[in-house]
Length: 194
Image 1: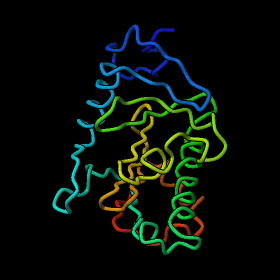
Image 2: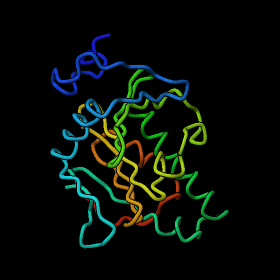
Image 3: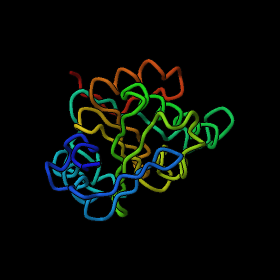
Image 4: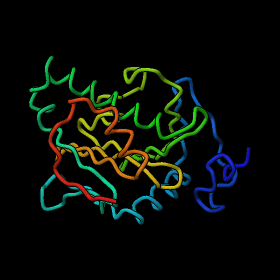
């Protein structure tokens, strides 16, 4: 299959010949070149900058609309059942939001700022725990960023492990997340309206 067709036009012709193999859990591994193209597009559009210090936050130029949720109660173990229960609940919100924003056959781009980017098909799994590494940057930003964006950058989710925050942006994601969040996350750190 032609990579441009598979990626929905991402890369504007620069990804021809990339293999696209979806594994049993919905992941498409990309090589450094293909992942680099997608990463550059994301970093350029959103101005990504990594940082462990508050002077470097937020990690992206948060688009409108966006809502940035406070994850510090989860990290502090204040969620009923403790850290793992809270992380699992947030991962469920992230997965469900991605499923609400995509059709069953669609993929979203998953970015890792130090490893090759990839594609993820949210409908390939039913539970967050089916996603390899769900609790360490996959669906919850524990020790690494969680970065998912729609193929056209119209929506996305960025979890920041050092700010302990979750930025949900774009109309479909903001609406889907709000509809699913029934008291899991309560405090909003920042918000940009439509």
